[in-house]
Each structure stands twice: as structure tokens, then as C-alpha cells.
Image (cartoon, rainbow, N blue to C red; front, side, top):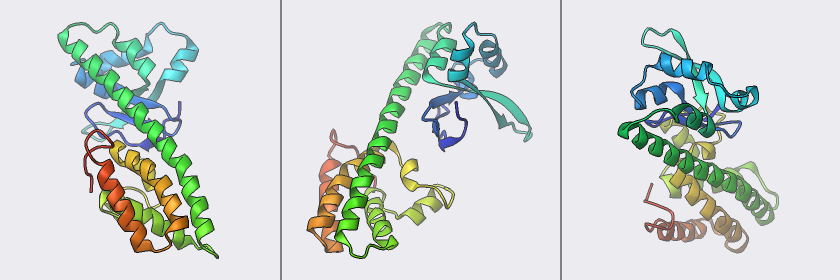
Length: 226
């Protein structure tokens, strides 16, 4: 399992999506949520009677820095690894958090699928931009993506990198919230069509903004994020 983050864990479950496309939770967050000593959770993972293949696939050694800025051991757990370790946790509170974690894994699986869809449909948009401009220049692509980001988040790529503390080389799309990436996936094929049929930038922006507003109706895409 790769331990290089694609999306940093930023919720109370300590969960994130890694470049290997693994959705993981940290052993530290699991200990906190289930009111266990982190050392006990680490020992449970170290001593679990699973195959070497299962361990390699579902538990990855990692670390964090404590309040004294000292590196401490930690594990990253996939959905299957999480289920294996917490299956022995009992009681109403444990049952509540098991359900919450399982729901969160499923939400992040849906978010990961939406990111994949957005990547695929970005190719369609890129091809449409190439057809619409002769010669095509780098700013044609960046202008179109910034327009979509402005519609979805109210900010362009540079502003989002600053606001969300992202590296300059980051692909902003990979750091969008689940509802934002879902809206991007829905808008990109429309933007591709409009690049071919509607050459005026401001008119395309108007049409896409109106379409995004319709998609934000509760139950279609989600709340307004702009």
C-alpha cells in the first residue's frame, strides 16, 4: 500500500485517499474514536492472526509527531483492515462508531469514483478545446478550468491552492470536496459541448453557471459551494 497522500485526512475519522487509491483511516484516529489506548491498537495490529498478504494489503506502517515533536508509530488501515481490527470491539458506543466508519468509507469510495469520472471527462473537454482553437495555446486550457473552478467554488486554481494550503504543483481537482468534484464531473461534458458550439467565453460561463445552479438543487448534486 502506498503511504503517499493524495488527499490529506481532514475529518474526525482521520481518513484520506492515498495515491495507491487506497482509502485509509489512521490507527491513532481509530483509538481516539473507540476510546482505546493507541498502544493497544498498535499491538492488536502487530499481533493479528492474518496472512502476510492480507497484512501487506491492508496495514501500512506510518508515523506522526506527538506534542513534543517526536516521531511516533502509527498504522494506516484500509476498510478491510479496519473491519478486521474492530470486529472484536463491543458495546453500543463501539457499534455506533463501526457504523459511522463503514458509512464514511463508502462515502469516500463514491468520492474516489467521482474523481475518476472527472479525470476521464476532462479528456473530453481537452479534446473539445483543441477543436475550438487553432492554434490551441496553454491558456485556453487553464482559462476553461479556472472558469469551472470559479463556478463551483468561487475561486480560481491559484486562489484555491492558497486557501487550502496546496503545493504549487498540485492538481487542484484532486483536492476538491466530494460535492465539488461531483459538480465538476457533471459540468465538464457540458463545457466540452459548449466549447465547440459557443465560442464566446462569457456566454459559455453564463450557461454553465445556470446549469450548475440547477444541479445544486438538493438531491441532484448537493448544496451550493460557491
